[in-house]
Structures are given as structure tokens and as C-alpha cells.
Picture 1: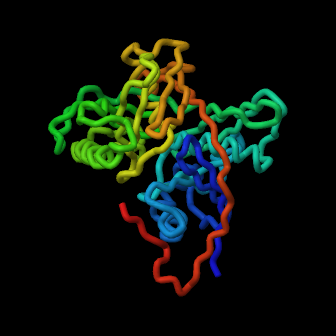
Picture 2: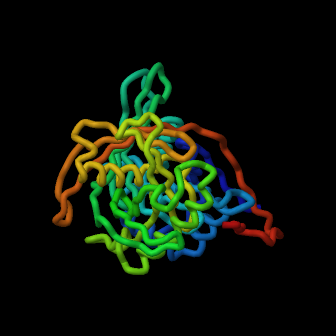
Length: 335
């Protein structure tokens, strides 16, 4: 009987299923290359579908296959996946992998202080600093890939009327707009409506090729739509968001790569000054803290390097089995 073992975590409520065994051999020297191979490989796609789809997963499941890093400068590589395929970046997954690296002994657990986990992801190399207090993980801070504003003030026709969005890159391309612009709020009661309009905005922008990456076509295209709202504190740098990514998945966390994109936009507008911290709250109330730690130029455009802080918790371990007689293999999704 076929079986697959996983370790599951959640970061701010968003699931992250880690798979270390049974990964089909993939071509490619780098993690980015292996992502391309995974997309084209039926065996890898089947394994993704098996562990993500019902009855073993659900439409909002998320996970990663552990793979070799690009070189000896990193501890590990990862191929992030969701119900629709393989993503290029994942902040909440990076935070979970930092905790997992400690739990498995890949990096040393400390009594106090910090240790670094270096992870190669398809959009580049990220570094996760795991902070300890009294021998336990207190939080994880990852330094994101360079992030930038891709476009401002694009108009998109929707069923709720035309809306104006900004696009930013934080490891993936995101369209950003206030939820109030479509008559909604960042609250659980509005999630289904946010899913529908988020898909419309993504599809409308992708239809006009509005999010072409300047140097890597594999990073092109709108990956998610971020709906924003003020935080309850009234502080300008306390904001809520609901990120609808892939084909209608809802990020329960504040979205790591989406937070990096949000930092790029706020820094560009001057709303996030050097040294200031953004309190970024999700639709379920979990929080990431983010700030700019560096500036630079990439592909001829100004960029910022954000760092994002959150934490993750292990929720269980599983051994999933497949009965060869089961007609619902590799599974199904209802959204």
C-alpha cells in the first residue's frame, strides 16, 4: 500500500504541510529549476494533489516538498504547493520551516538568542532567524527577497464596477486595493465575496499581462489579490488584510510574501518610514510585524528588502495511505 508521511504546522492559522519523503526525482540545478520540473512531472503533480486535495486535505491546504538547496550556502530547499500548483514564494511557509528546522535538529536549539536557517525558494534565497526564550521558539523573522512597486493606479473592470489597484512584488506579484473600494470589509463574513472579486481582479490583470516580471517570466502574473482595511487601533501602521491567492484560496495568515509586497508599497508612498514597523493583521486576527531592513536597485528599479516576523506551531504528524482500489485517488476539491 502506498503511504506518505507529513509533519503539519500552522502559521497564524494558515496550514503548512511538510513532506520530506517519497518526492520523485526532479531535474534542475536550482530550486527554481526543480519547480519547473515539478510543474511538468505527472508523478510530482499527483503527490501534490494527493496531499492537498480532499479527503486528505482541502481547498485551502498549503504545503511544501523539502528538496536540496541550490548550493552549500543554504540548509535546505523547498517547493511550495497549493491546490492549483506550485508557488514561487511563501512567507508563512518560511516561518514554519524555521520552526521545523529546530524541531528536527537540522539547526541547533538554543536556550536564548537566535539561530539562522537559510532556505532556497523558487524566487531566491531567504533567511529565517529563529529566536529562543528559555529554550522555546518565541518567533521567526525572515528576510524576504528584494521587493518593489510594479505598477500604480491600474483600473480593472469588475462585477462591482471599475476598481483601481496597485501591483507590487514580494516574491510573487500581488494586486492591492482597499476592501472598501468593492463595498466589503476584511471580516470572515465577507470572505466568500472577497474570493469572487479577488478572482475577477486577478483574471482581469493577467488578461492584459499587467504583472510581467522584468527578468524572470516564471515569476510573472498576479498570484494574489490583497484587500486592505484599517486596523482597529486606529494607528496608521496597523492594517488588516485578506489575501486571496492562486484560484480563490484564502490566506488565514497575514500572508508573508504579500506582507513584503505591502511593505514595498507603503515604503514607496512614504507611509512606512525607515525603522517603522507595520502591524499586519489577517482576516482571522493573527499578526505579522514587518519593516524595511535594506534598500537597493534590481533590474534598474529601486527595491526594498523587508523582514517579516511571525511564529508557527506544529499541529500533528500523519501517515497518509492510498488504497489501490480507491476510485477517488488522488482526490478532489470543491472550490
